[in-house]
Length: 112
Length: 113
Image (cartoon, one colour):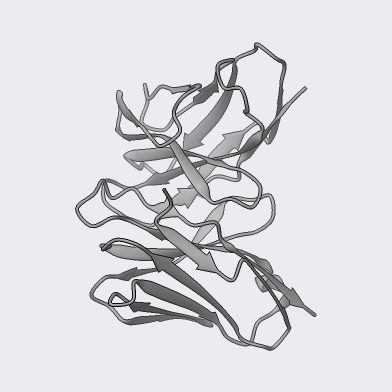
């Protein structure tokens, strides 16, 4: 079964707006990762946040983690058409094999 | 530049045929992974290898086989036993064990003729 599930499944916004995607998971984790996938390409790693961290930034990306709610969010500020892609969260199960489990992803479309 | 190369980009399989997908990395990573991605789905783990000459089954290993004879190479064979092989196949690697950022290739799209 999949550990992480993203919400919403699809998101359509205008350039310049902020985009927020959420990830919920079921069991305790060591860390959570966010990846991006352009159509027909491989995944690209964006951010890794550890279970003892609450927030992390990288350029226009902001990731939060709430272990009490078993959820994470990815915020992309001032979005650009080039941000159009699918975004996946990946979690590992604490005490497990450390192999990340991927959700179904959020498909983001940014209209110019 | 270091990275992961998957080939071919597109592959067609005839019924009853085995096909092999190539994955090569020059990152000097110990661990390598194969995932299957279906439309609108997340990635499902087929096989992984944490060291040369060793590999483990993932969640959907039936109908697939792998080998890890060299550190840089982790080929995946889709056998005729895999009845629904049409999918996008992704290879990834990490420096070692543990939940680390994965580096991905650009995938192979397999279709049935």
